[in-house]
Image 1: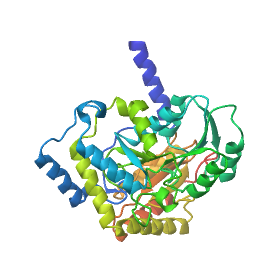
Image 2: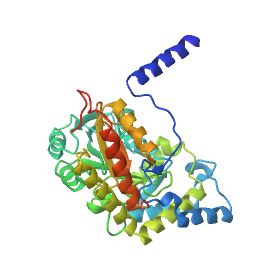
Image 3: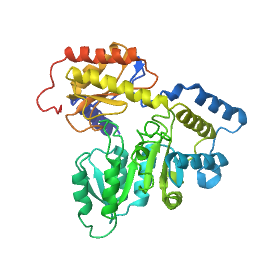
Image 4: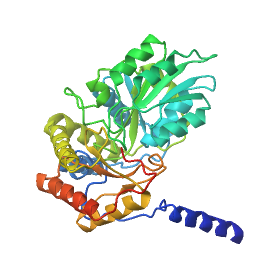
Amino acid sequence: MRPFLEEIQARLDALEADGLHRTLTLPEGIDFSSNDYLGLSRHPRIRDAALEAVRRGTISSPASRLLRGNTAEHVALEERLAAFKGTEAALLFSSGYQANLAVLAALLRSDDVAVSDELNHASIVDGLRLCGCRQARFAHLDARAAEKALAAPPARGRVFLITESLFSMDGDVAPLDRYAELVEKHGANLIVDDAHATGLYGDARGSGLVERFGVERRAVAIVSTFGKALGLAGAFVAGPRVIVEYLVNKARPFIFSTAQPPILLAAIHGALDVISAEPHLRARVLKLAQGLRDALTSHGVHCLRSEGPIVPVMLGDNDRALRVAQKVRRRGYDVRAIRPPAVPPRTARLRVSVHADHTEEEVNGLGLAIIEALREEPESPPGAVVP
């Protein structure tokens, strides 16, 4: 065993040398790093819903849904989620990562082709590896490149266009309406990861970018999570009823996972209630984030083509990103450096996440802290990619 442990230590040392070593760090300062976009993790309505579930009795589901883990509460929440998302049906999962693995591994076969955005989340990348299909990766948000890949006839099998809606690291938005047109034109199928947009977009329901672009019934599967704007944990897949029924039968992450506990289901109902009753929250977070973005760009800070609550501060070099993040945290604002493999090589950054319960003074203070930290730092070294 000793030689193997020494080898692992050598691998860790190599990560350290490349500026890619990671450690678990406790929260400190004002939260500008989590995905709690609407500030719902502390909302009293959600807390009260969870406490009421505890008072009612059972708080756990110690079985899979196909055994004794399925309850009336699970069924009722899935019906509500389908209505929220504007689809025929929905199915709960333990995490967004599991949901993407489940959808891709179950629906795609080895002779199918996945036309996938090059910056899609790791869970999509891993799901496509699991299903063993052929892949055609296209340049980020390039609809022309996507259409070219869709137009290439596969030797056999079906073609799927797979994309995030709001990209988690760049903070930019996919043209879902255009993608829906393309898959219909070429006889393909659309799968959307709407995780970071759920709860933030859509005038009627606030269900996400699939709602804003009107593609709810044009996608074969839509993945959404509760761990972002809803401030909780878990995920769900929404889409045609036949797709959900198939996932119940073939999706291994669903079949072999313990059901979500009723206390979480009650909290999710509470979060949906807040999203319905307080639409001003999503308007507020988008306004605050745009104000920060405008302030940073006015000082020459690169924020890509971002919109929504995610504001990337492009730095390029791994060590520079770590130093800037540390300096901002010392000023009282909890931001984190994002480095490969979460982003492409030489595109390290701060990933700032604005929340609806931030004050304007806190957002302005963060902007000033970032600008001051950057002034103390040398420019990115040659080879760093800072658009």
